[in-house]
Image (cartoon, rainbow, N blue to C red):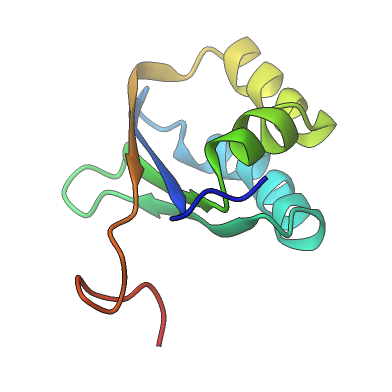
Length: 112
């Protein structure tokens, strides 16, 4: 199921004012699940905006696009997170970008 290079999904978003702590409450169990159960997920990190604390980026790396779509996005933990966040009506805007990682070490590194 692995691609020649890791598959990267970057989710960008802005939440309604004051919703970040609630979002983190939903995201934390998902991140813990991914860490414990999804060996094909290489990185999974929420970052919060410095200038706008209602903005966020979720950086995700997988062994393949298929792993993202067939394992991660089909997991009960991801589906619960998605349902919880949608029902809480907290997004102002959300978008995502998808990439294949450039080969390392020629173009940088992901961990030391």
